[in-house]
Length: 106
Image 1 (cartoon, rainbow, N blue to C red):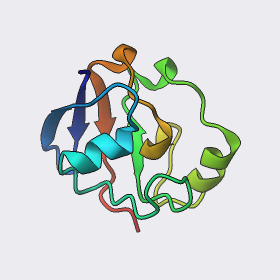
Image 2 (cartoon, helix red, strand yellow):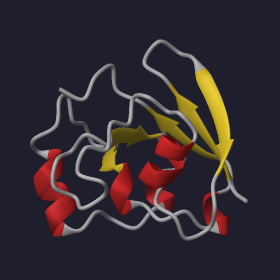
Image 3 (cartoon, rainbow, N blue to C red):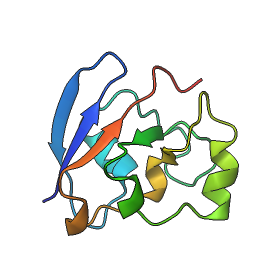
């Protein structure tokens, strides 16, 4: 199971192990990552699973599709590393992924 490192806005770090094939959002919710609200349940319709992919990892992920790009425009404090965790599928290649969490989703 790939290890994912979440870094909260206050610098608190939490490592989890995620199942291959599940969404990053699902793994976060199942492991008590409170900054990922996931209100729409992963249907790319709300932006409450917004996160920032660490710069070391951002080029290793597939580019966001149009619907995700559209939703990212609606989140609080988007930047070039913003992603919706519901749109990232955990794979063996993501072992060690570092994800920064926003201070808030609203």
